Figure 1 (tube, rainbow, N blue to C red):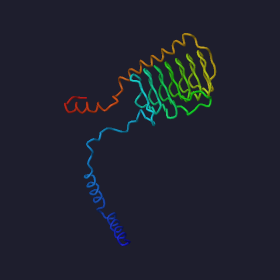
Figure 2 (cartoon, rainbow, N blue to C red):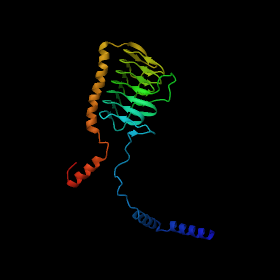
Figure 3 (tube, rainbow, N blue to C red):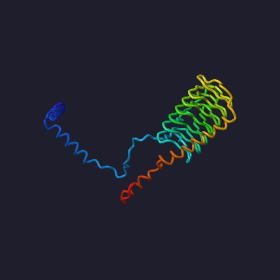
Figure 4 (cartoon, rainbow, N blue to C red):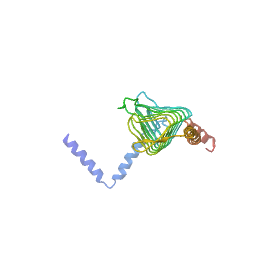
Length: 248
């Protein structure tokens, strides 16, 4: 056995040091490749695209038919996006520990991060709820908080565990709401930590749902312009157009 090993090692060394080493390797590679047959069932497309909807265990994200979710948004686990809602580019909704809900005609703008903890230290529900007609500004972080209907969360704000925004309230941009803090209805809060600024006027509260509806109307343009079908039927349509000589 030892003699056989030495002979094999000697033959391998002589082949590597041979001037025709590259020719031999190329021939072996070509021969191996010719024996590999590609499966006819293989789908030829680019797999580098990000998966938008990721099921975790028994939980599958649910998106309403007329909701707009941008192509590079990530939805994972217990996430529900209701009718007329919109989630914009670069946002991450991670419902691996608890539920996340985006309500009717609400919008989560660019690069927001929404997730939830197992439990809240305040004893309040640990799920993250964004109720109807809510506008969440870009680069906002929401964690196990509750936002009641018709609220505005300014850009780059943070709402921590157990925090609550009551109806018809506004949080200024760059504010931080500590755990368990409550923003009463009809008030404007700002700062780090967030504090009461003033009471909203009746006209300001009426503008809150109008903003959510305006963003919904804008999302219709994006939905019709950039969305591809969920299935692979469009691949068959393109193949048929090519076979018939129809320009795509």
